Amino acid sequence: MRKGQIGALAIAGTYIGTVVGAGFASGQEILQFFTLQGVASFPSLCLSAFLFFFFGLAILEAGYKLKARSHAEVTRWAAGDWGGRLLDLLITFFLFATLAVMAAGAGALLTEQFALPPLAGRVILLGLTLLTVLAGFSGVVTSISLVAPVLVTGALFLGVCLGLKHPPDWHELKTWSSLYRPAIPFGPLSVLVYVSYNLVMAVCVLAPLGARAGGEGALRWGALGGALGLFLGSAAINLGLLSFPWEAVRFEVPMVHLAGQFSPWVQGGYALILLAEVYTTAVASLFGLVNRLVPGEGRFFRFLALLAALAAFGVSLLGFASLVRYLYAAVGLAGLFFLGSILWRRLKVRDCF
Image (cartoon, rainbow, N blue to C red; front, side, top):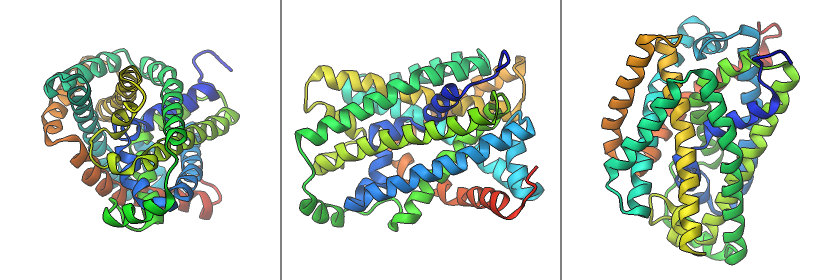
């Protein structure tokens, strides 16, 4: 592998770190799109893992073949000129929205767990994110890929421990799940929407990441490692939420609250892990947004990054849980066009490039 190229482990770590964030590790995302399905949530998670592998690999390979500088080249490859422009606008909007969600998540977390003013969490998160993005693409990949293993390990450990402490009562879960309406009521559609909005956001990093990959083998193993890591983390979180379902629906950051079942130290430690996950997704979102609008890393790139961070701070005041439930679902539904376009190119057109 030549100098400057990216291997399978870095690809897998960056893939995981780009997808996980405030909604994922807090449990709010998994709760809204999977846990509220009750017993059916685990088969749904298996389906999501396969889709993450299939579509993640397709995006990475497209970036590799097209030598993509941003997500725009991949969206045009998938959906053509006009469809690509529409997807480009959707993705650019969602990158900004995701940055705002991450800021809101940081505010909610520091308020619930450390009694800090909500504004403090937003300012700290956006400040660290801005500094990382200003370091360039190499800084983005390094920060995300190094943090990702810690994120998955923390979620896996806590979810399994919660399941062992209080195994889910499957009979009770039937009653519980009937009382709450998930973000997307139909299970298979909920899976598609979940994968869709995550990939709509992740394509901003996966496309240029694929262009820098050390070969097609690195792409395949990286996509597989990323999908497996996401499955293990999400399945563990789902298990933890199903173990304490009545408590899970009461908090904006349910997994951190459930970590308190063991000790304040475990709760504080998981809160720090969650902050790291929020940070990685915020970095990916801000970089993808600014890199699309101003390719390169010059003076105007830095100015626009600062402007986007300030605007995201304002939108984050709308609140974390509301943004996850309604904004993510809406963008996920719109993003189904993106997944459909990729599927068409992969299965119906022999010469994709």
